[in-house]
Length: 354
Image 1: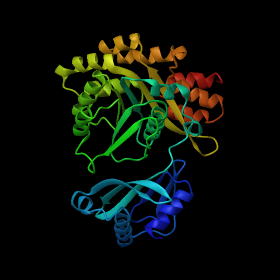
Image 2: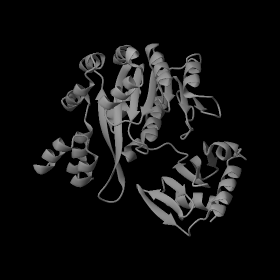
Image 3: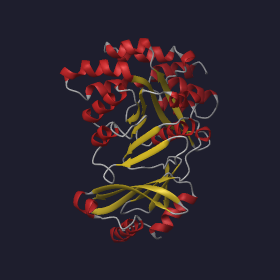
C-alpha cells in the first residue's frame, strides 16, 4: 500500500494511531488494540513511505529526522483528516507513528466528558491542569474545553502546542494557535511572548520543565486563565510533580504560588469497555480553601480524602469514577481493579458486590 492508501484506510476503519515499523505490517490502533494490516514491511519499503509522507506534508525537510533521529509535525489531507506525525529512527531504519486527528472538533457528550470537567471552561483566571498518561485523551478534553470557551465567551485564546492537533475556528472568541518549531522556539519563549499578546486564556500543550511551569504560574498570577497538561495521574501526584521540578530552596515559594492560582486538576484514563471500546474515567478536583492550605503546607497527600468527601462540590476520585463505570456495566470489575489508584479500597468495594 502507498502511504496515502494507509492513511485513508486508517481513517475509514476508525484507527486512532498508525504504526509503521520495519519487520512488521502496518499497525492500526483501534480501541486500544493494534491490528496488523497487509504484508510485513522491510526498511526500503518504509523509507519510500516516509519520503512520500514528507512530500504530502508540503515537501517538509527530512534533515531533522536524518540528523537527529526524530521529527514531530502535523499536516492535513484535504477532505480526509489531520495527522500528527512522529518520524523516528529505530535499529538503523526509519519508522512512523501517526496520530489520526479529525477535522471536526470532538463531541464531548459522545466521548463521555462529564459536566464537572466542562465546568472549568467557566473559569476566568488561575490555572487548570489536565493530567494522565500518554494516549489518555488529554488533548481531546482540552480541545472540548477550549471550544466551549470559544463558543460562549468573547475572549482572546492563545494556544501553544507541539504540534497543533485540533484546529479551532474563530467563534465568539479569537483563537491564535502557535506550533513549536514552526511558529516559535519553545514553550517557555512562546508563553513569555503570549503575555504581550493581549491574552485572556492561554492553552499550554505541556508543562515540561521548571522554566515553563514558572512562566505558566506567573501568567496565572497576572489574571489570565492558563490551561495545561502533565503526565501524572491524580491531583496529589500532580502537585508533587510540579513542586519537585524545582530545587529545594524554591519549593516553598512554588507551593505558595500554586496554592493561590490553581483552580482545578482533572486526571483521566481510557478504560476498555465490555463491548471492546474505550471509555474515559475522570478524577476531578476543584480547589477550595482546605485544598489551598494543604498545598501551601506541603500536605498534598491529604487531598485525596478531601476529593472523596466533596461530591457536593463536583469532585470525584479516580476510583469512585471507576466504580460508577462498573455499576453502569460499562467496564468489568477486573478493569476497575487494574486501573485503580488505591487497589485495597477498590478490592473492598468489589468484594461487597458494588
